[in-house]
Image (tube, rainbow, N blue to C red; front, side):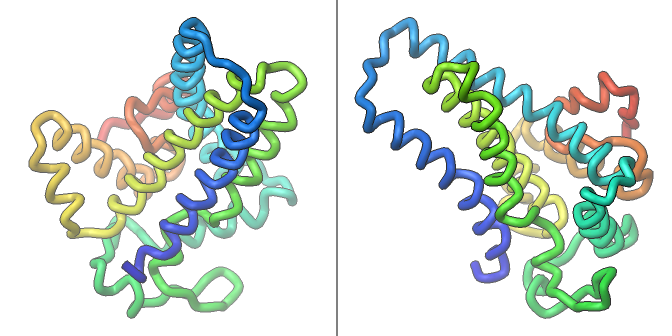
Length: 221
């Protein structure tokens, strides 16, 4: 679907760096023992959980609070996102993603489908920073699986965030119809809508909202 182009680009930017790293490790031909498989699964889970807190810190401080010049572009882009999707117009219909536009902070106009997903290069940039920081201290296989966990969590975030603002869709209808999952999905949508109403609360997006619970910014919608 053409209107979902920014989401597709972001997901591609998420997984291509990891696939490149995994390919490099495979080409080295290092054997993987049963113990190593168990360890890498644990590291994957650690990477997934780590991203839950990284999501919170990045959103709360980089996008909302730290008025550092280096973060200015991220904060302006995120402010545009809030203005494009206020509580009164939290959803946009799929057919309007390409026909409606929004005026950014710099006066330029862009289509609504470009106001939801993060730019495709953000995760690759963070991926490179984590590889550079972890490579001297962490075994390559462990680092690879840790980053796989971060990529999985980030993908869940981007997909869920997209379908939170794009409504109604078959995905939303399906998720709401699944027992238990439907309740979790409804709460997630309401939780993020609360953040758009009260921007100093509910910085996590994906359940179980660990950062907000630990950081004291959890506001139950």
